[in-house]
Image 1 (cartoon, helix red, strand yellow):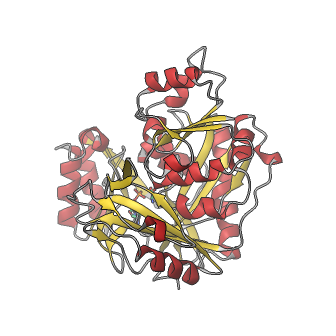
Image 2 (cartoon, helix red, strand yellow):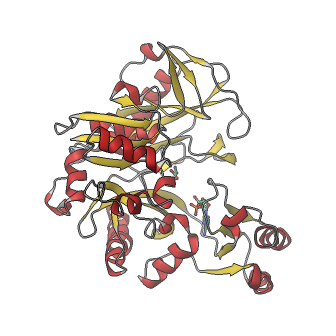
Length: 424
Ligand code: AMP
Ligand code: GLY
């Protein structure tokens, strides 16, 4: 198969690495890719939302399948774009169509879906500019902390958790009346606060059958001990020790199966990954959010634990025969630690030369924000490299990642030294 993979982060390097191991692969192109994806295929300088340029490339290279890494092109309708085009409509795109991608693109849409299909989630209500007064009154009836969510995509910044009623009222007003997140906060979901440990489950669906990939936990805050600003993710582990079989059975029966059935009952065109963000409240799973793609950096631990040929699974999605395919999981644990640019997630510098990559032994380095200038690798983003290792448990996997991360250098590099601290 000739594959075009869209995206340029650590998730896409992990996808490229895994796709490159497939016996069915003929040619792999990555648009736009990074210095790491180049090791497994050909980078093409097309951006993920330039559908016309993607079309031209797909037809020119006779691409057999498009794999979409990030949510943006899905929420913007790349699947619909392909289906509406005579020359593209038979080329499968791994991902949901624009309507189904609203599971990630609109918090209100996702909450309605969960309620309709009896999927456990926090109680909520949705408000607009016109119902701001009712929203403020609703807050008065809730207990602190207050959870406010901008309905639309807001680059991971749209969820506010506020300690006092006064702050919550001020922020609700800012979001609805003063367009704090632009169009994304034209609607705001106010939610009951849930207290517990979070983890994520990834399900590949073909509209009928499904496969559950290994679960993972990511570490979102910049500082040690889960403190400071939110980031795209500073590290991840898989499996998640607290998610023992009893809990995972509940996740399967109360969340995964109703979600897959719900997609079908609602006639959604969903052929791709469903990322289910969960919280365990006293051993009971609740859905915090859905995403319409794999997670980053979760993919950097989930795909290394997948033994099966990923193109065989994707072909199963495209032909709606996923149930007939095998999903084999590596018994070993995997952990990844993210090296980031100093200053991230606020202002940081780019263009720093990365040294020492050749000294890494026994870990896999997935590139997240790099470019290759000739033989040199330079930084081009906040999150730069994800250092993934296997181990008999997450402690040993983490130990190896930390040994190797010490060998890599770039100016002002930073990483958290306590990934997995709450689990080991
Ligand atoms: P989301 O974008 O919906 O995943 O929310 C971002 C983060 O906010 C989540 O990963 C949680 O840590 C936190 N969060 C969201 N909803 C709730 C809730 N109802 N209760 C407690 N924390 C929440
Ligand atoms: N690591 C969280 C995400 O990919 O959204």
